[in-house]
Amino acid sequence: KQEVTQIPAALSVPEGENLVLNCSFTDSAIYNLQWFRQDPGKGLTSLLLIQSSQREQTSGRLNASLDKSSGRSTLYIAASQPGDSATYLCAVPYAGGTSYGKLTFGQGTILTVHP
Amino acid sequence: EAQVTQNPRYLITVTGKKLTVTCSQNMNHEYMSWYRQDPGLGLRQIYYSMNVEVTDKGDVPEGYKVSRKEKRNFPLILESPSPNQTSLYFCASSRTGFGYTFGSGTRLTVV
Image: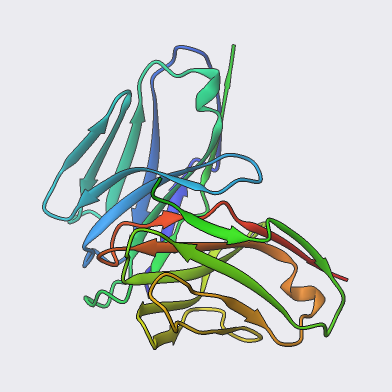
């Protein structure tokens, strides 16, 4: 059974800092890994999707890396802003090697960026 | 605009009164899923569908039903809701089954 862990559970930083969020998974037989952002009481917004054949994916100030062999992904946020405050979730598809569309989520990292 | 639309956004109901939460996507996606999100438990999959008339159970299917009669719609049915089904529910869809678009969520309270 795939298990996804995110560290830290919560992070509070001053505006302008560069920061790293971590995601680890137990079964490396994944097709991809997806990072989401969730604002309080709201839906999930997809940030980045890294295919298993890729090592990095970038979008603006966000950079996500994937190391399948070690079962790890990191989300790097450059020059953080108060508007980045949210819960960040990583998710991987079902680890059975079939595309049944089941995502396993980590518990999330609650990020607070204060002015 | 490409999106997944859930209705209603908020719902308060009483124990045992059947309800349906609707989900519709306009992206012609094959895959659709339902999740519930609870404090301390995170997001857990309830049911998923790979195509019309093809559905299967996720991690927490008890007390829920789904149907996929049309590609764009995937309603979640609670035949006899109980207080332990109070939660935040999300519908999601994907073209390939790998990258997902989520709806805005339905906050359900069962009293």
